[in-house]
Image (cartoon, rainbow, N blue to C red; front, side, top):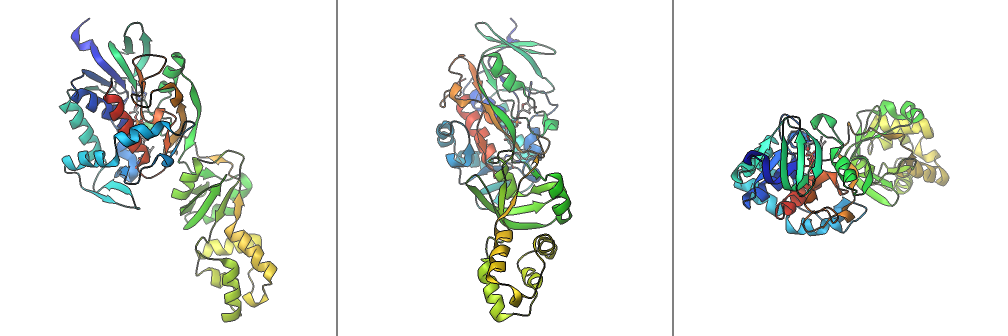
Length: 394
Ligand SMILES: Cc1cc2nc3c(=O)[nH]c(=O)nc-3n(C[C@H](O)[C@H](O)[C@H](O)COP(=O)(O)OP(=O)(O)OC[C@H]3O[C@@H](n4cnc5c(N)ncnc54)[C@H](O)[C@@H]3O)c2cc1C
């Protein structure tokens, strides 16, 4: 076998996790090949965080991750922390800022993070071949990795193929196919961090609110997020809805408190004594966008001078604005989802090395695993941490 086709480790996928793994393994002196089907490495990083890459979060906790095996992520997250990645960012002189508390973004372009990873891979002598899709894997003593143009062999195979979201960035289900080929369980996948769409009757009722953004408390099944929501033509989006989507079960309703910082029943009592002649819609306009207040009053009860409102009316209005219940028709799918929930069952792997417990030499890292972070830099931190930790062992 010629030396160019034999490696200590072949990594499938040059995204966030794959490059991090290649860098760590290469800098340990391992001979590493990274194979990427897209023409460029790190395409998802380039479009992340609105082009500025929310590369980590200062407040990473295991509780920010969803998984059928919630303890699995703890070890890697504690061994490669946000500060470890920040050190790398500072080593390359990349300017960054904290946006929403804890969320760190590049000051200029996400490209800087990809350049950092490429430079780190180069420093470790890790070879990256782009435009090189892996088609088939076989295992005898070593792994045989087939692309359209060559076959490579390696003692370790790392699957870093990511999730199914944003297919235009190169996402494929190949990682799940490899898991199935080797008999590893896969937890059912679904789009997460994704806008929720209306059922058709609700689209008629609320579609005209498109473009309105407010702070709301959104809940489903006992989980609540308070943050911005955005009304769209198709449904509901914005950070609070994206977060909730990861917890939402199809067929279940979600509940929205559209006035989380006001007790409407108490406010009505106050208005009745202080401004009895004022119309409800005029008063609500001080707390909600006019279009939203009017639409909800049109749909759920006409506006009147507040002095005419009974205690019962007050309670009914509080229910409408604090407990707006809606049943989403679905999500906007993988085309609009930031991540994939589900993936390779982590009970199949060592939480220290990321190696399969059944198949020696086979590793899985990053989003392909059943570990899904919240919005806000948590998914990249998982990619860095899992990639780095596996890179210490391949
Ligand atoms: C629009 C958008 C914005 C986001 N913004 C943020 C953010 O700001 N902060 C954050 O923390 N997270 C963000 N995320 C999520 C984050 O990008 C992912 O969680 C992260 O990139 C996962 O890293 P990964 O290496 O596991 O997978 P990926 O980065 O998806 O990399 C997987 C790679 O494998 C390659 N591949 C697949 N199949 C094959 C094959 N057969 N052969 C060869 N190569 C293959 C793919 O082309 C891809 O390059 C965002 C996601 C999206 C879609």
